[in-house]
Amino acid sequence: MENLQSLLHGFTIAITVPHLTLMVVGVLLGILVGVLPGLGAPNGVSLLLPLTFGMQPVSAIILLSSMYWGALFGGSVTSILFNIPGEPSSVATTFDGYPMARDGRPTTALATAFGSAAFGALVGVILITFLASWVAQVALAFGPPEYFAVYFLAFASFIGMGGAAPIKTLVALAIGFAIAAIGIDTVSGSVRLTMGIDELVKGVSFVVAVMGLFGIGELLIAVEEEFHARAVSSRVDWKEVFRALGRLPHHGVALLRSAAIGCWMGITPGGPTAASFMSYGIAKRFSRNGSRFGTGEAEGIVAPETADHAAGTSALLPMLSLGIPGSATAAVMMGGLMIWGLNPGPMLFVDQKDFVWGLIASMYVGNIVAVVLVLLTVPVFAALMRIPFAVIAPLIVIICVVGAYSVSNSYLDIVLMLGFGVFGYLFKKLHYPLAPLVLAIVIGDKAEDAFRQAMLMSKGSLGIFFANRLVTTLVLAGIALLLLPLALQIVRLLRKTDEAAHEKVRII
Image 1: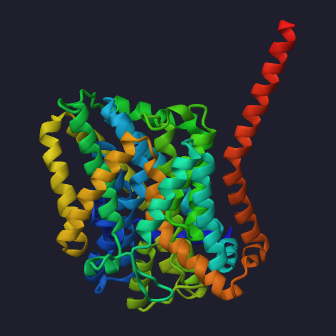
Image 2: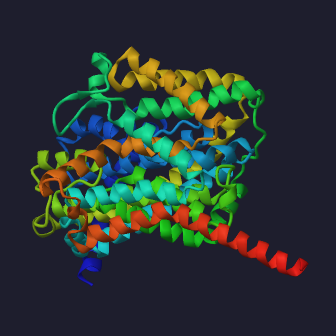
């Protein structure tokens, strides 16, 4: 009850003309940041942060958080329309969003993504509102063993539930781990796999890899198959937007499951990217239409988008209650809080109630503003699909080249991006899954760091991963997922043997 009263007080702070104006400005800037590959929410918020130094803390955090919501929504636009993820967490959306858009249904794809994202964000804000104390206790229990267990579970979910051949998934993961290992070993400080190239000491940027694998890789496939020689015929109207939103309740199970995954990964913190991949893999395994995933299945958009936004929103909870950022963007925001003279942590809820509850209330209002703005732009974005591919293709190349160069102002990144494009083309031609490869590139180094830190803590004993109930549960769940393909294969063999025996008896 006390939380509800505090929330109502927060709404009186958030719903004012100046703050609503800041929300609109922040969301529009965020959409622009999300649409542009290579920029991303953390960089966008970092660039905007100096402009907030002269503002009141609550106004400043409303502006920054609104930009964050807009960036999360904007990242889906290029993922769906051009197969170029604007945000790392939008990669999984490309798997079904882009095929649906190319099938002449860009309006449906965008509306489905935005509606699912709104649901995920709402669940995340509700979590922050009512479960802060419980979540704080759970998050405090996380150390290197627990972090590794979360990452291990994410990897295992792709092997056990990805739908692709487990061996091909393992190969993709192994290649991703190798790419993630390039650069400085953060534990020992040694340099690995740089082949004498100084620019590789910093590692391979995820943005460079993703733009090559998806943007350039898809272009190469298109050129070979001559599939995109003409524009896509698509209906662009509001009726289709409302129809797509009206169909979301049919995916209720996926919405709830993905929101739960997203919230868990946001507060632990596994992050929005890992959450979207894990949610997609689990949805593909348990959906009645799992075989249609990758061809434009709506549930393949619902799952990652819901998890992405649930994780992105709930990642602010450990930042506020514990002073532990749940994502890169949350870390930037936490830096802002310190600059404004605030100390994130449990005492923030006591000493700065107006700030905390004004921010939480603005999350509700800001996400509503973001949903309204992005839905208003759906027909505009969908109309881009009517432009002939001969015109769009050079634009995609330019976006990829500029995005790759902007990461660190290095021409090597452009070369790497083109190399990843060829790599992505070969993966698709050989029917190897790209999702596990990308997941390993994203969190492979984090998983390695957590594992090695855990080994240092235990002096080399693997028993640390069974030292408490939480980490044991996560590890055993991961092992079960790893064994799932083998178990299913044994069941199929036994079933075939049984059917053959019955057939033999019937003939006799």
